[in-house]
Each structure stands twice: as C-alpha cells, then as structure tokens.
Amino acid sequence: MPDSAPNPELLHSLGRLVRGLSALFWGLPVTLIVCIGAAGAGWFRIYGAVPPLATTGLLMFGLWQLDSFQKQERPWRSALDRAKLFALINVGLSPFAFWWNQQPELLFFNISVCVLALSAWCFLFSLNTVLVRLGAMLPDETLRHETRQFTSLNQILLGALLVVAGLRVLVARIPQLPPELAPLLALWDRGGLLLLILLGLLPLAMTMALLWKTKEVIMDSVFGVKKN
Image 1 (cartoon, rainbow, N blue to C red):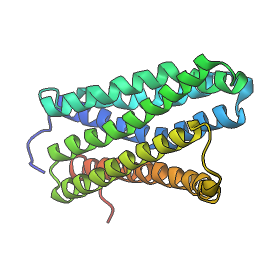
Image 2 (tube, rainbow, N blue to C red):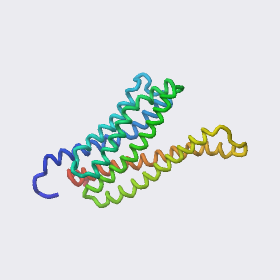
Image 3 (cartoon, rainbow, N blue to C red):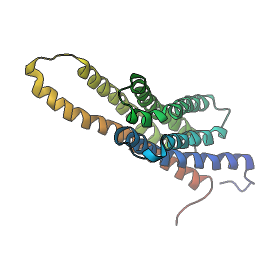
Image 4 (cartoon, helix red, strand yellow):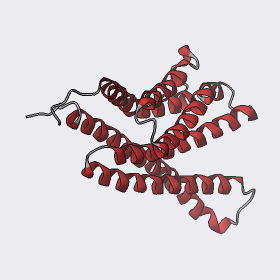
C-alpha cells in the first residue's frame, strides 16, 4: 500500500462494503432457514411474520451498505440496483411465508409464495452478477478469476434449478398419465425433490464462499489485516 494518507471517504465506503458483505454472508442461510421453516413447518409462530421480515431485511441492509462504493461505475451500479429491487420485493412478500402456513388453501397466498420463491431466485442470480462486478474493481487477480468462474457456474445451476422446478410443476398439473409411467413418475417424485435441493444449496454455498473471500481480500489488501 502507498505511504500517502488514505482517503477518509474511500475508507468509509470500504468499511460499509465489508459490513454489507458480512450481512449478506450471514443473511443468506438464515433467510433460507427462517422462510422455509415458517412456511413449511410453522416455526416461530409466536412471532408472526416478524422473523421472515427481519431476515429479508438483513439482506436488504447488506445491499444498501454496498451502495456508497464506486458510485460512478455504471455496470456495478446497474447490477447492484437490480439486486436491491429483488431484495425489496423479498421483504414485501416475506410475511406470506408465515401467512401461507396459516391458510394454505387461499389462492392469493399460494400465488404470493410462488412469486416470493421466484423473486428469491432472481435475487440470488443477480447477487452473483454483483459479485462479478465488485471483483472486477478490486486489485486481486485471483479473486477476479475465481469470481468469474464460480458465478458462471452458480448461474448455470440456478438456471437448471428453474428448469427442474418448472418440470415438477408441469408434471403435477397433468390430470392423468399412462399407468406405464407410474414407476418413472415415482422415481421423478423422489429424485426430482433431491435434485431441487441440491441445485438450490450448491449455488447458495458457493455464493456465500465468494462473499467471504471478497470480504477477506478487502480486509487484507486495503485495511492490512493479515495473519502472520
């Protein structure tokens, strides 16, 4: 690092950047657990819709912390604004995870939960684009290479997740299928669910790893926090 005095404004924006990456790192798994638990198992029922709101709000907070960094970079700003839009939609729809558990027979609640799931998918997809844009602005060639490689893989897996989920919905809506397909459908019913879980958790885990790696690179190269 140069010996000249650091720019206080830059240090402030980098500090917010680190806080935002940390909030996103912890917020991703917590939001997944809380929202699925509230919708499927009725967890945290005593607190109503507050836990889903709080966890999706943590993700929104993380993105807003990134907002002050490199405001003049248009590709970065565009990617960040898209992710913030989907994060805001997630916050607005997150109470339906709790309400759907209470009254799953209501069509409006069913549609809202489906839109929430689709918005969450879009959020994770766009967050990977945010990480690519951020990595391109940081002075670490290894990070840039890893970010490009793993975000591309993440987005391919997310695309496959959307296709598999669509196929499951399509098959479930077919009124009657030939009896000869019963064994195949039984296998698809079990294996398709496991495939959905795998295709959902792998991109989530790799996105978390990239968030942590990016935060560590900033701490090491900019703030000089290195372990001997």
